[in-house]
Length: 543
Image 1 (cartoon, rainbow, N blue to C red):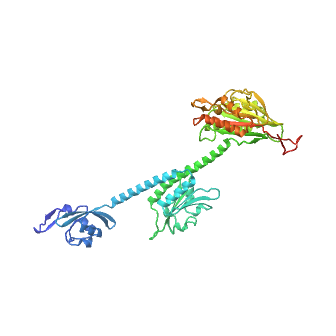
Image 2 (cartoon, rainbow, N blue to C red):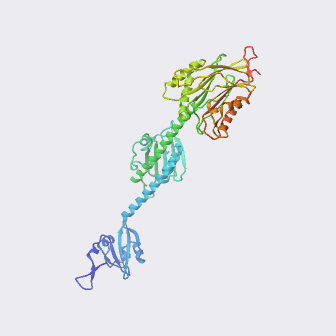
Image 3 (cartoon, rainbow, N blue to C red):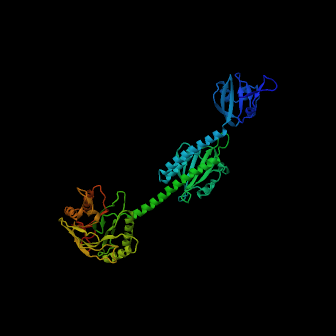
């Protein structure tokens, strides 16, 4: 420090005015631990005068630092200081710098970094699943781990109960469906309606109902209730519980409540997305069940088998379809209807048009005997839509006549069905017609085929014959290979026949791309049930 001579004597030295008025506290302590000099700021801070012992006027951390002069930090009153030493001729000059605000800012920065890392972790965990229950579990667990001593996630009522997920400080998650009244918990009813949260200082934890309080939490000191915002509609509410501390209430600060709302926003968005996904999945599942082809086994005494495979490996439906419509009532002259169709294209868009055609065919069943009229109506429906896709169809009206099965076949732009006789002969049905959805009128011819016991009428889509593969990977499976394969299937049960045809086409295509594949076998059974008139009554069979 700089010293000047006193006007009262050449031996008396005093502090320079600049040093005395310095804004930072400064003091000189001699080798014996006595304070030799203090500036004005040090006098005010330590409430000391020269000649006092350092141990009597300074905090312990500064006294200990003076014994081995090193920079040190500690508190003086409610402020934090950093002490910097400058040894000189056995004495030590100490400069004290107030670092309270610096430490506060550093701590706030650390807290913000921790919160940012937590929100990033929360977002990753919440978005890793589109399962609503999983999102509720993650929300409750993270909230109990980082924001409070325990947490509850309550979603809007399902039926008569509210789904509630609870997690305590042990990390164990419980799920319940509780018949509770949200109005019993202050702020909960408002949160479930998406209203702004009620400040925690306005909520008395003592009035919390029993289903909220838990024995392991102990006496509650504070409680926060905030909405979990969703897609325009609240996804639920988050309740944070904090136990009472040893010195009274352990409340939530304003900053903690704001941070809780930031977390709730992420959790609510994830839960809303999970709920929306679940609803869409349910709708898709319902629609998919309607688009799935029906099961086949028997149709009014006629054996049936079918095999269907969409083009896409992950698809369930596509542009190929078939339907089975049993004859109505007990009329012996009534015919059952088998429909096989192929919509131009593949994938979901083709499947949607498939569903429309199937619904229209269902409505036209009373007219099913008149194939030409049914095809004309379907053609008109497609021409009046915005779709540019066309459709090929085969209608097969089936009826048992004595020991034979009569099949009336009408093709509209589709490959003619193949008749597999018991001796292995393969014949093409004499039916043909124009595409549906292209011309103003559909022109077609109908062929009638009689099947003897064990003989089969095979309907198939072009995904079979146009499967590309073979040794070079560029050749079509083709009509000739299909007929050759069927020639070896004479008398074969329909299940085995469709399986063989599908297997051969799939093997030919190998792992390459292929169109939708659909095959239906209509087989006259080898044994027929006799009628009650002229026979031996129901329950008897004949070969």
